[in-house]
Length: 288
Image (tube, rainbow, N blue to C red; front, side, top):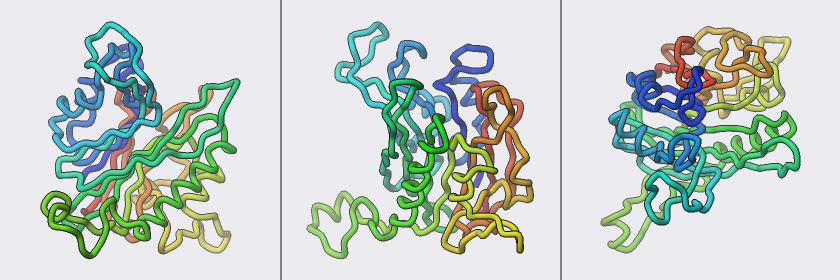
């Protein structure tokens, strides 16, 4: 299965032009896609329902959208349907059905200075040849390590608690009307967590995701924890560029996977040629 993650900067490319078709072309080969900075009905991007348009352009009928920002839409040109809302968030698309979805809002700091946005982690379950897994599209704050740290801890808690909470409908017995339309599904144990984390591999936030470094043998990857699939495929943590931080190249975009899935990583790469955003898409091939 070929997975991709891309912060699309609401469709605005390196040339300053908004072009969702260009982004779809850059992602056409993927089987499962995690997107960040996808919006609905913003004048800057032409009042487009971007989730619906991206699903159409990518020919992916199975998709879910999770806004972090969700606002009343003031009267504006562009033909938005009555009751439409102005939104900004994450998206997951797949060539196979997404069995259920949940959108988790992450901790947020108010700000009277730099722009502070509500961030979220969009979760879905997808069936693969190896069984069902959880997949996430995540976008963490750009503001500071101090504001990211609580978001990382919440994300790890979501991952740890998933099986304890169960799927959105979880029980052993239910009335027939629920069985007919909403058969409960088990919560998958293993997960793939993709997105723009706005952190670098030498950060405390990264160590929280994959474990601290030990002088006796590298990262302390926990058997019940997560691994960086870029590293699982043989790359060094400090290598790779997906964006810039204050004009400096950095790897900010990641695909983390349950430790049990590490051996299933076949390839990991960064598309350095993509022009559709201020980030580069990351690609991971997994035996799923």
